Image (cartoon, rainbow, N blue to C red; front, side):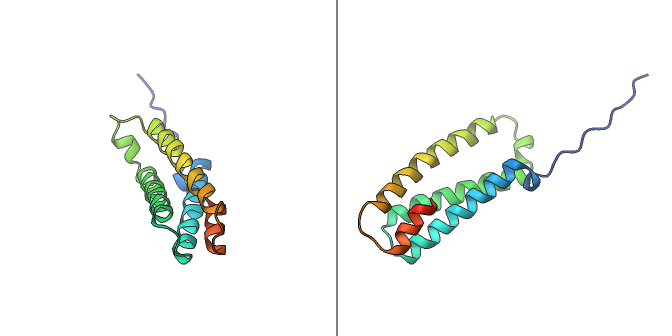
Amino acid sequence: MQTLKPKPKARPFCLSVKGHVKLLRLALAATSMTLFILAQAPEPYIVVTGFEVASTFFFILLYILRLDRLISCLFWPLLDIINSAVAAVFMIVVSVLALIPETTTHTVLGGFFH
């Protein structure tokens, strides 16, 4: 007769290192977007930063609700890496563009937090 082993408890996402990094990324992107809005920066800065906030929030919600385990037809770590790479490229471009011209202090701070 087989003995059943108890399943190890999964660590909650918000308490994991990955969760802390995602929450920090969300906080920095939201701060950048707020500063860009306050500075009345050009719309592409706000749109790209808003996209980053929305996609990061989507992945946080996905991992908190454990939907990555429910929807197993997609390879979620790969999607997360692709999202991070695309977001990093966009953020570098926006940050450099925000810091190059002489702009307001809020725009420079938004580019710095990106």
